[in-house]
Length: 492
Image 1 (cartoon, rainbow, N blue to C red):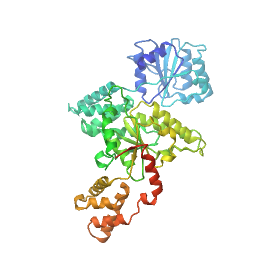
Image 2 (cartoon, rainbow, N blue to C red; image 1 turned 60 degrees about the vertical axis):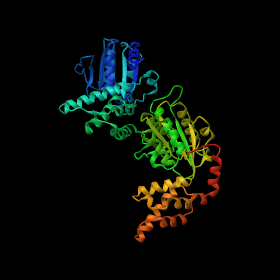
Image 3 (cartoon, rainbow, N blue to C red; image 1 turned 45 degrees about the vertical axis):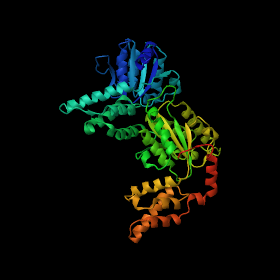
Image 4 (tube, rainbow, N blue to C red; image 1 turned 45 degrees about the horizontal axis):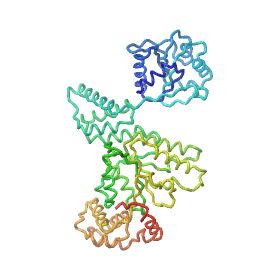
């Protein structure tokens, strides 16, 4: 059944109280108007500014009586014809005992006809006495067909406003735009589509980053997600050849071109030595899939009040699902899902909710979790099936270190061919990518201070003066690499 059929069934059943939480009032009103073609009832709308007025399929009468809530409920009780009464933003008035009692009398049909009362608002919290009698109805979000039609109508509107100038469109980009608009109400999608069209009179691939930013700003009401604007390309990441190939093989499936018998990819866990590029790989995975990257910081979720942490987590994950398709990056996940019990059980409840969400989600949210301390991760998270794969990001080998030097020198406007990269790679054995970058940065400061160009000798000098983490924390790094050797898949 579609949403119009569902709503019509509720009206035919004389449901006493229907609650609809939405910001798209116009679409709800239109749905009720459409329902009149299937089941006839007198249809009324109330608001605090206009009062009670009748509106049918093709007419809208003048307001009836005073606009206050008590007068509206009294008018409904005295009505001589069965009706459907759509009350907009009425729930705040239910804090008054008189209004609450009057609505309960209507619901229980005390000395009145069997009307259908509909409460419409952004968020509606009812007193327990009313909640037990209410049926909550959720309008469905527009599908790809409705969104495509909306974009076509907006393009036609743009042409009328601009002396017949047609909107330039890229067919593949429009399909991607429609896919990224899914999860929004029709009015929100229309607002973004209109903005994209009127910006340059075109719908093309260049609109996708702006669309994703607008969508994020519109939906991240919880404030617990961070939009990562700078997603890396795989070409910008040295090494990780096996992980790159894994992502390439699943790109089409994540985009919706799913072979028979397969499920879309769900996520990966990146373990590794600190500074070896796990964060860069998370950004590169989003770039590889061609979708926005959202970062969730567990530190912002935790709250001292009981239940608030779990509530924040639910809100953050719900926002991520609305922003799908996307990559959700949880950095240093072990800090948010500890196996200890010193926090009153909050971390265990958080872990339970995350595991349930990972198992049951159906939206196109690809989870990338990164961790440094594998011994702090609970066994439930590591078992096979939670993630599609667990990759280990190890210290870079000699060839990868050459690539890292090449990337960081070129990024700073230097010519890598002017440096002895194999010699630098050999001297930096045991260095992470972050330590190689800092050696170049320190050498640049030295060159600037001595007022001479950067050369191989200055970089070599910084390398020899650095004690990498693999030396400072040799025992811990060795233990991590030994643990991962036969338990994970090497990223490179």
